[in-house]
Image 1: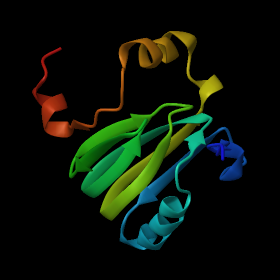
Image 2: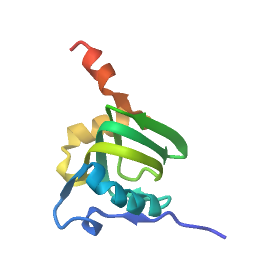
Image 3: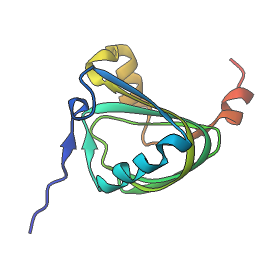
Image 4: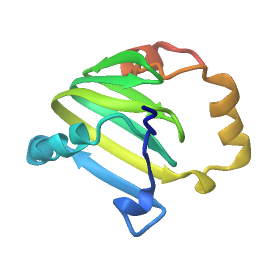
Length: 128
């Protein structure tokens, strides 16, 4: 039996072409909604800016983990599923892909082979 992986559109959660949501103790109950989606794709970019907490996800059939001060993204079309969200504090930003300029989109699509969370310490230690 062949199963299809559903694709969700940003219009499912927002009437705008972007969605910004604070994640904190007031939204912990909403984490269950994210976990209930199961394996799926989204037609938009998702950027997560964590201040604290613990997230475990499957992205393109690889398990990734993020803890504490971390940023990561999920690209449009990537297969993903939430496995664990524990006391996450931070920001969730979803952006319709046509709002991302072509030159920026190409950086994501050509330079990133997968999703790799970056701790804020690593980012702050880099010299520009």
